Image (cartoon, rainbow, N blue to C red):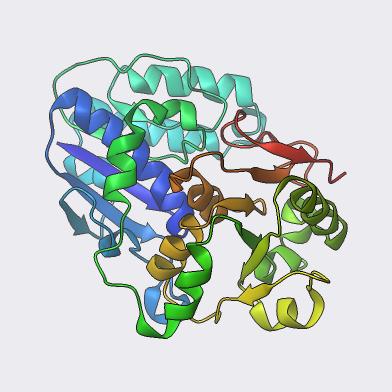
Length: 310
């Protein structure tokens, strides 16, 4: 059995699912068990299980700690020790030391890892397998991209009120512009995440205008009213998504565009990755995080045009 703890919203969930899907292929598993408890309360903030809207592999959703409930005795002990060590500042803040500990955990079929740790082989061993991490690097799963593009299609039909927007999206010169604001501008997160300034978008739009003939800009944002008031491209057609569409509809519309200007958002990253448009141009910020102490590379280095946002 494969048990997966998911964290965050759809973009983060898709990264974790992609790595899960790799292990399912290796182990020959046809389903998995999922815990979305760390994804927030969907009744309060629209988080929760977002994968249920896509054609992913079957899974059973539970609301308990998977390792403590379903793990072997050795897995439970190793997991408890890891969680305790992670809370100690001298150990938990030491990335090299934690990577060594996580390597040991993989020997016991427990996968904790981040974007930088991709150079390992999945060891085929018996017993339950547990996944709890972000895995935000396409090197984990790029070899199964056809599977992911098929499974990350929404179960639901396109919404009728977006008919005109879909017509614009289908044009060969359509450009998805993703503008992440919301929590990135809050006092809590701005110092770590706010890198896509108005200057970044000005540079990115200029770059697109030089490379795409008569680009048609389609804006998507978690603050679409602000975007409508402040983001226009003089002399070019601009369209704006309503702002209240469900995440599965937004993902389908964004990934249907031909070219991309993305923010440092996992949601926007997946939209550009899932696009099957030949010759697509993807413009991204040169730094993924504002915090200088964090790993700042985009989750997948090739195929992008970078705009310096420092």
